[in-house]
Image 1 (cartoon, helix red, strand yellow):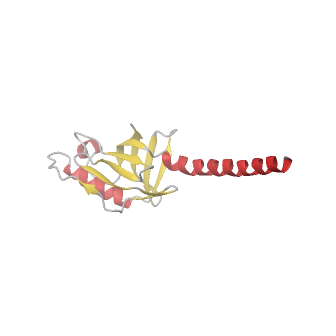
Image 2: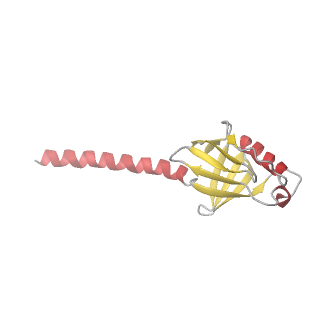
Image 3: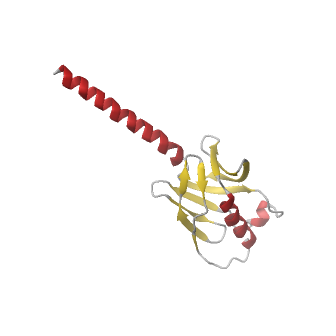
Length: 145
């Protein structure tokens, strides 16, 4: 009887600890989940408001489905989410709608090209700010919606 209880406690603790480690691993990535709105992009000579006069780009993460989607200020995009720890890769082909954009066409192109350069991400401000980084340079910054 005592042997069965000890065995049960032992296996229960193994199962419990495994589930904790799984949770910790997915918690870090699951902080990406939800909608983020761009509020900074590096590089272009045009001001941020000049690039995005009508609508700021958004990015939406669904870590359970491994999907990324959003709006690049005019057109919608969607693709596979490739993330490992804090490494992230947007080089996979994405489906993008082809609406004609009168304003902000340069902003749309700048946004999509910049995504291709991102190698890592960092979430700061208690989960309110998402930074996209290339090498060691912050290239894009988003706010949680």
